[in-house]
Picture 1 (spheres, rainbow over the protein chains, first blue to last red):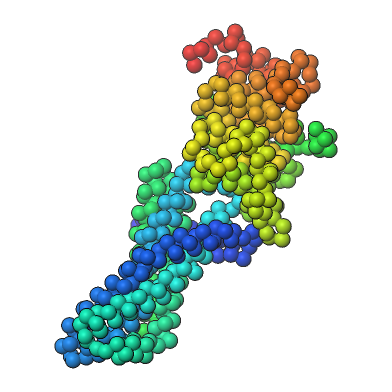
Picture 2 (picture 1 turned 180 degrees about the vertical axis):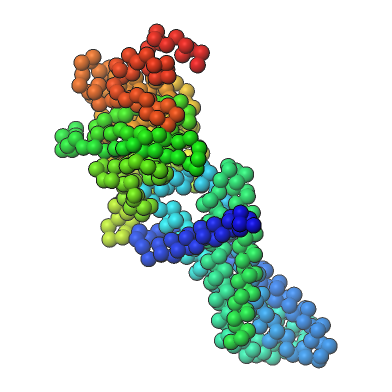
Amino acid sequence: MLDWLKSPILTFQEFVTLAGRASLNVFRRPFYGQDLFLQMDTIGVGSLPITVLIGFFSGVIMALQMSRALSQYGATGQVGQITAITLVREMGPVLTALLIAGRNASGIASELGSMKVSEQIDAMRALGTDPVKKLVTPRLLAMCVTLPLLTIIADFVGIVGGYIVAVPLLRLTTGSQYWNNAWRSLEYNDIAQGLIKPLLFAFIIALVGCLYGMRTSGGTQGVGRATTQAVVVASVWIFVITALITRIFVNL
Amino acid sequence: MARNEAKERRCILKFEDVSLQFDQADPVLDKVSFEIWSGETRIILGAAGSGKTVMMKIALGLLKASSGRVSVMGQDVTNFDERQWYEVRSHIGVLFQEGGLFDSLTIEENVAYPLLNQARFMTDGKKPTLDTVRPDVQEALNFVELGNTLNKFPSELSGGMRRRVGIARGSVADPDLFLYDSPTAGLDPITANTIIALLIKDREMRNTTAAIITHRFQDGHLLANFRYNPEKDRLERLPANSPLRERTKFMVMKEGRLVFEGPEAELDASVDPYISKFSMHPAQNPERKVS
């Protein structure tokens, strides 16, 4: 039993240490601004098309599903409200985070993993630079800046997708009613949890990717293993965290 | 050579009873003690797994010794943490076994890496740019005769060229100590000799203190007996009584222990069957042909 628990606890300890070192490095010189912008470009701009696509279709699906349920109660006018709330509170942050976990946690883990197995991380240390500062901190910062922005975009595009289904396609409601409903239904509580979630997810995705990459061992096979683990672990934590935060905000 | 005189003789690297042991296994390094002084060239010989690379990693702080003391440039670094090590490491040049180049950076960016990223080259927290360090990078690459490869990627170069780039990257920041891990391993004899000639040239031009891990006795022999003549741009044999011969010393490692330390003449004279395997005298150890 103890042995069985040892490895996850050690991993968690490593995670906390890495999180601490990477966060402290944000305030320590030297700063690697160029690496930061490069990462923001890869993570943010690179993920934009797929985020828009997924956001759009989640809105479309939401409106389609709701069209039947709401018509049973004769409340089709509420479709804007429902789409906006589900997207902003839950679907937008979680779907975007899962997408970015699949796309970037794997990318980070495999990049750092290959560097580890080809001794480039050691070379970096030997050349007098801190790999945590040079590799982890820019990725963490870039992720924390871009994931909330991507989530906002996904939310918006999703509401537009819901509009397209609800108004021109199924004629459930009028355009002005849809937007009015969507806009008025959102409270500070919804916006707050919709923005805190991506920030925490960003932290998890970037650090899990970096952690599994940096502790890769066992050649190319190890790189593959690290990549898979990073995506699985990051995805699981996204769900755990979202459940916890929702629990807190439900009571507020 | 002006730098040569300005620098007084000082102890660059010192190991005192350094041991390294993982768990309950046999020690990887067993009470190793030695000193390397400025201007010296140290050839570290030994079979595979005898602890040569581990020793280098300890000198760089990439591994921590289980016991004993390590000093680098007069500073006791035994209990340094990772952050303190970055400053120490920025004064040491390294060539890794396979070159250790960053494969996603161009040759120019690779060589510029120490200048662009080490804290000691920053003024007011600002990094120098690639343009400002380009002359230094070009000079370092010209030195290894790869001045026209600036925009290539490491994968486009041959193994010997990659190692030469590694030498350029290691020396671009003008280190006080240069550690070479098997600079000639896996190379054909001609390329291997080119690399050693570069090391000799580097030693002459910059007066670098160097430790060279190798398992080819020819490498040590070349380093001990030749010097670079900048006027004729070629190597020439040192006269038998030249004091310059003194600066090259040999060390032989066996199963984590240091079993020999001394000049080439002593190495050649050794009758120990293991040590004489690494010497130049075939007559004394006819069994070398089969081993």
